[in-house]
Image (cartoon, rainbow, N blue to C red; front, top):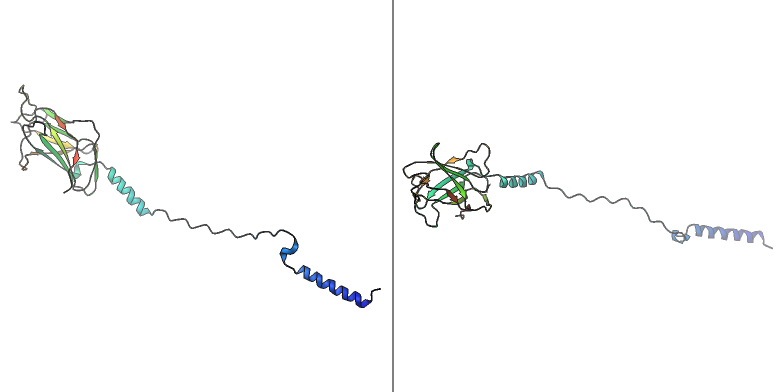
Length: 212
């Protein structure tokens, strides 16, 4: 038979065991521990996009490269090389970009030798090969011209030696207000001479003069 003292000791022992169980580690409770929820990580800072200046500069450079050459930025020269060519060119048409920015020379120019409202001779490309050149500031394009500068065998000559025709040149794809420029023919020494053109002028392919 249990005495009151024994009952009291047993009660104290059970209380101590209960406290130990209640204060034990959480992982000993037999359940699955739920992962602690993390706060959402801070999104990485987006990389800065191109600045307004860089985009504008690139667009401007591309736009300048696409602008067709206009008469206002070109200096034309027409030099006769020989009066009796065999296979070489009779004259050389050249144009220099005197503007501050590059321009595109896409095709062949319009070249006409004429006497007021009288006879006229137009220049035509020798080939249909497409030509597209980027003409930088100070650079020059040369175009060889092939035509008879003396009377033909039958005596015909469109622009005869005793006449002083006018010569006009206009770049390809001109603006509506671009009416071209007047050109004077000279000899290789730069002295002005009359242009004698007895038949059609054929233009060779435009080419860039090598940089000095």
